[in-house]
Length: 578
Image (tube, rainbow, N blue to C red; front, side, top):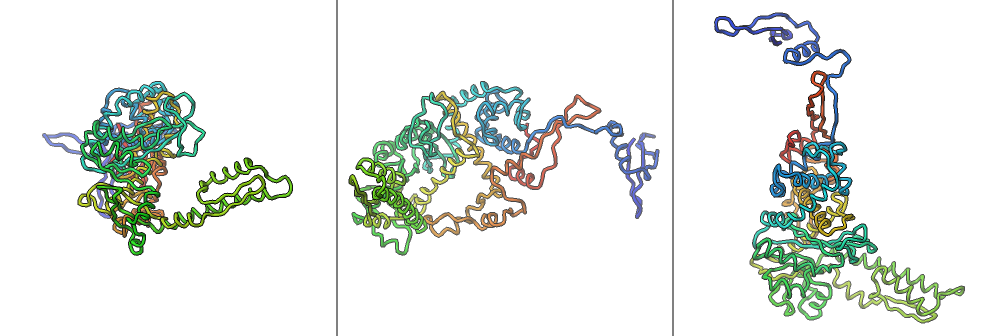
């Protein structure tokens, strides 16, 4: 039997209960009952019953939700990961250890935490998201995660080599920069006091260097002891590029504190690699004093190529950014004025009649601390005696420094036929993409710091895991850019840029997103972090029915327009994650 709606001209359709039967080799049907006067809900119930449904008693819920997990962020991250080379390297459907590594990569992206907290969040009984049931993890303890980290650090050379093969090629640009993060505890063999980029000079730290492709996609990362100087990390990266990645020729892009003249002479040239870096301020001053650089060249331009016998076989592209010059002048004046206020307070203490500050050593100690606070000692003449103190600005020195405000000089041996002046400057400024990677690694998105591990291999594995999480984030951002505050129309932005020296502009589409907070589709613009939070409201629900209380059904809610747009951009179906 079945229910059929029969059209009835201008009247409502007739709702008929019918049955089909076979007579004379033909299938026929007959009407058993006219249900047109029945309430619609009753008709729907009877239709469901005829299709094999179960009658629910009045007042009894047709189903019950056994458990509900935040799912959308997991579906987006895990779905994207499964389409990347990293997942293939970990092995599809392989050993549990590889599944745990996948879980830690996704967990680091959507909810960064310590390994102990991550183990609790991944255990099925205490799962904080659908990641555990989707991957079928069951019970997870911290020791399992540590074992997975030990396995991951052994796979690091293989994974990095495969990523390099996928993203790098001979002759390509390779971006390299160094950062640091502090550790908790005192027993890690890599932990040392060093130059802290996190204003944590009282904390032991590690140093790590990140290699990226020209578009900012991370390829490899290496951890060093916390007191390692930036330039000394270069040798291992050169060996990695030449030996492990088998790249015969690349152009290494690094900042002026990293690729120094000593490193060029001792490591880059012997290895046959080219470079793009910049000169330090004293070297630029030397070009001016030696006559190789005329500042008048920049009255009507912001970029000029010069040569100098001090840099044989290299091109020097000198740039002047007026906006940068104004900012440096403003900052210098602010620091000078703040230092003068501190010094004036010391002078007043020396000259007061009641309990004056006396003694050469005591006055010098106070003055030294005031000058060191803002690194302004080079800009002041100091006169100290046992009972007097005076100071004055070094006007000539300050003016000489101000004359070079906004200037920087890019140096490279790459011929202009292969890389013109504008492209060389743009390549150097692309180091900002590595800085963006460090910001993501070290802040709320991935939380690489502080590091709680004690064993050196575990520390290296933790840092590598965070890099893999950023690799996943980088690809997600690229796909989801139209929904984020990220500029998704770089070509249009570059067309508005008068020179590579000028500040990178935002495209018209990105400026409209910034001004209105609305995308071209009429949806709210998100940061990457808030978009993941919105996606997480799409839940995975385990449902049971009275008819089959032991059978668990997976039920998903309807996607919101914003969630639908996100999964369309990712080309993923959030209900198909296993």
